[in-house]
Length: 275
Ligand code: FAD
Image: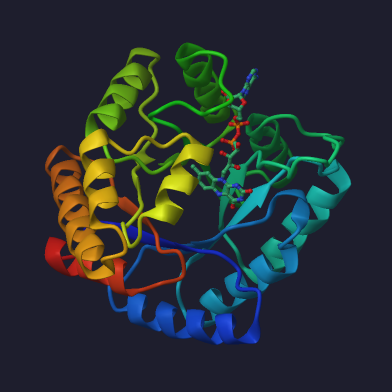
């Protein structure tokens, strides 16, 4: 069997974005992904858009995973959406807590992703393969690294089948996380999430918000390139490809690409990796 890869998209906001994503998907399908996943705005804000892209992927003959976040949701609304996804033929979910934009009250009947995983298992049995999020560099709101590890273990015990990580640029954080899990007796597959580097400002803003560390040597080089986009892309391609090579060599079970609805960088990495 070929080495498993998967691609992540977000639901586009405009008809032009939808058309562009359709083309991007076709380009990426040539790499034969195991599945393609579609993000879901917390609070259900993108539910229609998410489900619509998921439906298109399935119609294109590719396995689709719907992300599903529970913050602010009621059991009734989750039950209804799970039924819709089952009727569409979806067999894979990425179950998340999500983050509500500030100003929203928490409300809802779920506090953590583990509550959602347990609820999905309780109400739909084994109908879905459930992925959850993993944070080798620790989730930004975790009380301690140990508490975050325990929170991950709770998601697995609640019924998660496998996990996808937040992106990282330091493979040691991933392997340390895997070792820690092993000590807890957890050998659930954890698939590294890979963020191609295509720009500098957005990546730095994003990474600060989600708690992904950009190593100093990468940050300084990106800053030094200024707005020389071609050099940033070339450097990013080298760095990310080398990291993927190392991850593969050290035995990761697959790679999940955050495509940002663009094909060029992900395709270039796959090409260099011979995937
Ligand atoms: P949880 O696993 O519930 O963890 C959230 C925090 O609570 C952590 O700090 C954890 O340590 C802590 N915690 C958990 N359980 C307990 C407990 N019992 N007691 C005390 N503390 C606890 N966001 C979206 O809105 N839409 C998406 O589509 C989306 N896709 C993602 C895909 C991947 C692969 C990843 C890695 C992230 C994604 N996110 C998405 C972001 C995610 O929603 C945020 O990182 C969010 O802040 C946490 O979600 P979670 O499912 O990891 O939460």
